[in-house]
Image 1: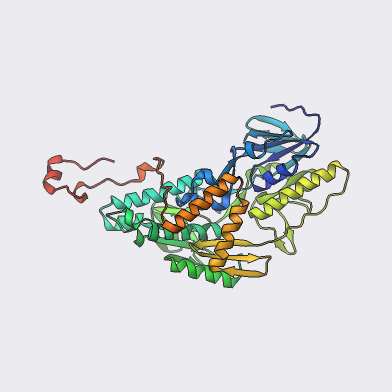
Image 2: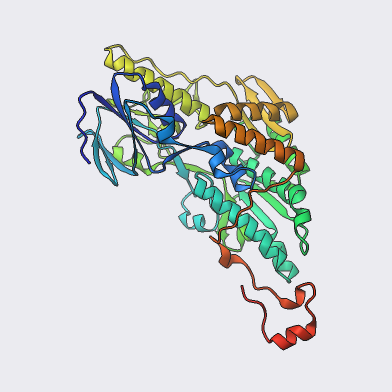
Length: 445
């Protein structure tokens, strides 16, 4: 793929929070911008767990990148970047080579299974819409399997959900699953009581939400346990398979295991040939550059930067600040001005536990919890959503779910249909033993 541009060419890899803000900040700059992403949509990842737990539809938290960035100086290409050649100043993708004058890498992160990639098959993580749909289907099919399973012990396995990792994603997923099974679904099933489902949250560290102060961490655990979540800290997982997990010498039988324990940077970072941290992130300069390359910026989850003795967190607000900062500094470079060092302003972070329950920190000082934190979390997320339609749709869906307690986005498309057990005819209402004997066989899948 060849590109011939008269003006300064800025290539942005990734249409997430950071990449989108960088592109928007350059819309009126005297440059030509090319945005590359393997998906055609910007995704609001903090609400993915609500897609996975049947509250929201995928379209409610995504927006077409082309629509968001339409303008005279921006080109959007659907492409998966494989590597970067810093010496030749080209990005190598599945569509060919794309030259750049300035490069912004904002690919984000993927799942990390701590040296056990084989666990991914049995414990999916949550980073994309496909991940959310996969998890939603696994959860819903587990409930369907429990409904048609005659053996009580096997039924308990289908009704046991294990989430590994008690960071924000794990905590929010555990709370949402517990609320859904206890309050949203019981009246929809006749042969199984979904309120008796077990939701276990496993964390290897001493407490949940370890990056928050101890008092907020303790409050989050208390709220989770009120919802019925079994929280186990200091629980190091040593095995995962299709029938459950192993924690030390303890076996937990569960047919649905979800992963929220760790992340790793995009593998593209390894092609740069520069120093990386343990998670594979690029150790950037104070101006977010690749060391020795002022024409290459790295932002978001792909950047490793320490300020005031603490790493800049891999969260949406930090990525957005980085994106806006890079756009400003690209303008400065073109004007011959010195680059200003990046400064992350921590305005706060929140984690929701369940209906009316959340914890949060504001400006690293003010600590909030309960309904106040939950209300603030709602407002912040509505503000950050891209697109007026998405803001309205999510507000209406939240209002409907809050008033009715229902989860109506419960689509099963057959992705994991082979997980369902065989139906035993004698267990079906209205089927006599004589009819079963006459049929000579059970019902098929």
